[in-house]
Image (cartoon, rainbow, N blue to C red; front, side, top):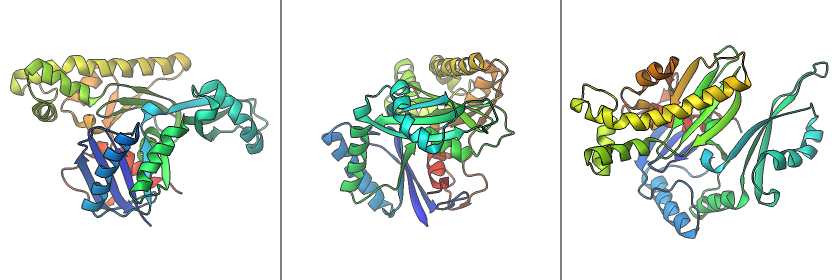
Length: 335
């Protein structure tokens, strides 16, 4: 059945209308500027403002409202992977509240919690089971869902951005240990995948918007010009006398520093392992020169996510492929 995957960012709203499944068949890809600058409503006023924009977005692009799939930004979610002694499903269900209280920094009465068993060892194995905990505040989720209800949408799926991205990349057991860096407009989310399993997720409150601001300040450009220069010239030192590259480098290196810290954290926890690859996702992944610069700085293979590989359907030529990773992952989830 056709579904609509929706990724609301502070810079743009992205959507894919497609037949959902492991290999979605795409009918339409849409991306529009988010004039509100709001990704998640915090009160009635912002909910009304964003809701009106989304109502127009669905109407203007003739998108159906019956199977709409959403994500929550990592910045409002607490994601933890815990190791505990092996438990049955019933035992885990009884114990999960206590585990969440120990690992999720949200009071139990305010917590909306989902969990998933990542690994359960055989009884003969003397090993821990690993469980993914995803927690956020109930009131925030209720306000978010209510905003969609107001425009005639009852969401069928709500999960975190990084879980969707990981699904879109379709990791297998034999792939090298990989760090995913999803660089959006206002944040950068980082995750390590080892033997196809997520090891941790962290979110940093800096992203592509920080690069745009750097150009505004250094070159005296307005926001629109700075965004255009960033996308056109990026870290290409041969363009615009290298001025754009010079202005961007300090901000880009701040992002790289956070990537380096995440790699080091994983290695400290797993001394026998090495992060062999970085995959860039999000709109900033196409910044000219960023792949080579990160490769030079971290001495590791750097790739850009390609969520439309092997996918059939109507894919516009000018679409930013890595920016659509969240939507593709939503469509690939089996309900």
